[in-house]
Image 1 (tube, chains in turn green, purple):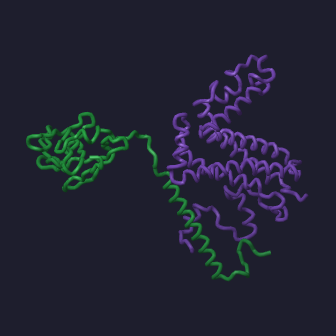
Image 2 (tube, rainbow over the protein chains, first blue to last red):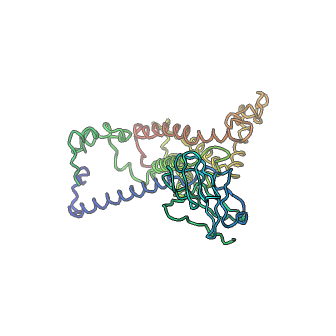
Image 3 (cartoon, rainbow over the protein chains, first blue to last red):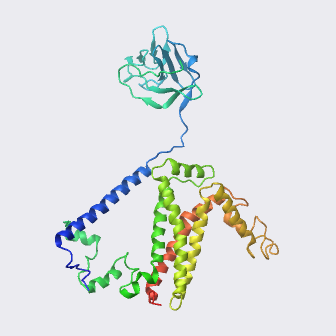
Length: 168
Length: 249
């Protein structure tokens, strides 16, 4: 009977024993690593009960080219120009007051600390540190213009990204 | 690959090193928490696979599989009437590996019922319920009933049509149990009504609803597994201590 504790079998050479030992532990390690990756991906949230912040703001035809329309209920602007549609948050990037559109000078003005943004939402004067937030815009299956307030488009100092509707 | 830990550090984790002599090997079951259910000495000829087919061991392995997969499913499942079915659909279609874990849990659960019954048949036909192991047979019957309870309570949790009506039929049968069911023998003589008998106790309500779902859930994920773990410890320990493992026919 072979000595099970010290494992002195003659059939297996030391180098083969070492190789099999390393292969076994490598396989076990790979299996554990794959299981951990699977576990983390399983636990990672894919579903949410939070209601969507996508809001319908009427039909695209409701907005005329060149218009800047303030939506009082959702605190955002719908801008339509020759390139398409844009939605900007009315929340001033300085301390969060609601900015207002000045049609005469074509600027967004913040009543709290005098922040000023141009028609593209870029900060021109005053304390605002960055341009107004831009929301994603789309047309849903029923033909409504939908602003997704959960999807804030990251923008630098450059021009706005326009939404082009095939219907318009 | 030698790991060069300081010897006192290793000794803090492993109180004793690997056994070097047969005498030390005999002391392992006495010294280790994981091995102490194991007997000190087993006769090789009594450990042959064709004596036991390892059916109890397979049942225990499947129990571990259901425990781990079930614990992961608990992360997404909510035992609320409004959410239960939707959470199952999320697991099935949205969550990464969700359908895999759910199927694993389901098939391992089915497998436990099958292997436990086969295990019982094996013990019966090899006469392993006889002295000195009569009590372990009784413990095993308790475990069989717990397995049935786990299967029955788990069946309701998806809260779809088949589980709802299946559980409805199963719990309606309780009304016909003598002495404790309202429609059973001596039920009406004892003054039992459908809202005061054993089915009412199990469901927490006269109807199958939110109360029943939360009761079945707590039974399925905590109370019954805890009882099963306690009885399994006794069962395994008695297998070893009562001796005469799987005698040759």
